[in-house]
Figure 1 (cartoon, helix red, strand yellow):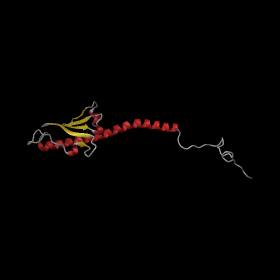
Figure 2 (cartoon, one colour):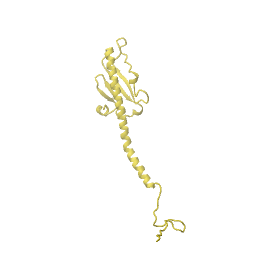
Figure 3 (cartoon, helix red, strand yellow):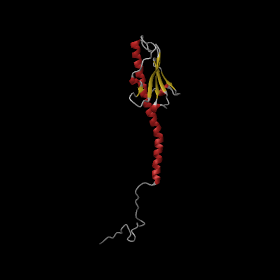
Figure 4 (cartoon, one colour):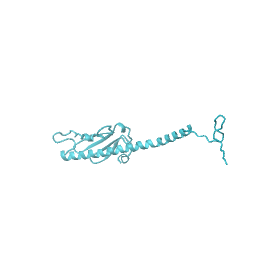
Length: 163
């Protein structure tokens, strides 16, 4: 016995029959808009968090270089007996090594490190944000000969910015 099945297309005109499934290729406009809205919401939440995370990393790098500069100043004091120069040239602040003057040293500086003040028995080092970090909420980081940490241009606590 023969089993006869009907073809999916009608013989007259080649149109799809009413009961046959239709397949579409691609996305509808609604699907595309939903994906764009979800992407926008996720990026609006994630981008500020990522930016704060990156800034905190750059700040940690500045803290490390400030501590290294503090060690340089202590070695200088051990060699010269004073922070503001030598017995031959008193009052002349020592120059920080080039590798300690900018953070990072090579290019795209994010912090400028400087010896703000120097007297016979005291000094203050300052890391000022520049470039990409110019708008940092912590402002400039400072440290002195006793290890006292501070901030200039910020109303945040030292503990928040020096971690």
